Length: 112
Image 1 (cartoon, rainbow, N blue to C red):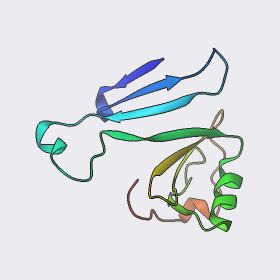
Image 2 (spheres, one colour; image 1 turned 120 degrees about the vertical axis):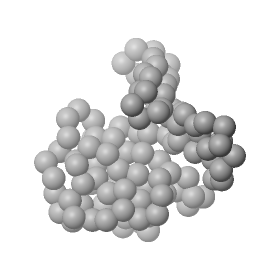
Image 3 (cartoon, rainbow, N blue to C red; image 1 turned 30 degrees about the vertical axis):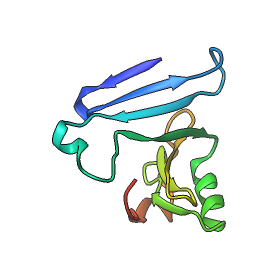
Image 4 (cartoon, one colour; image 1 turned 90 degrees about the horizontal axis):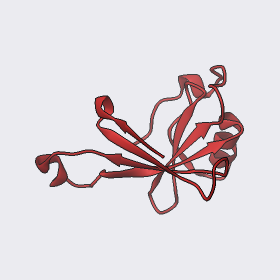
């Protein structure tokens, strides 16, 4: 399935082997000609994975030395940085979890 988000200037494409199976979300960030010449390119945004508990997932990654670029302050979304420098989005399955420390007051690190 596909979702255009004109207000955010991006398109989401969701791929799965069958309805109800795990999905791979692809994000395409729209850009104009001038933006397209700027480095680094962000036309292909990132991969996203839905997780059962975003706080526990981020804590486990952090304990292994993974950089949390955008903490899950809202209980719904986070970005982590892979060892090769790629941003990966984590999304809470279902609704957002209630805000929780240390995540609620944690600042962003770098870009995602």
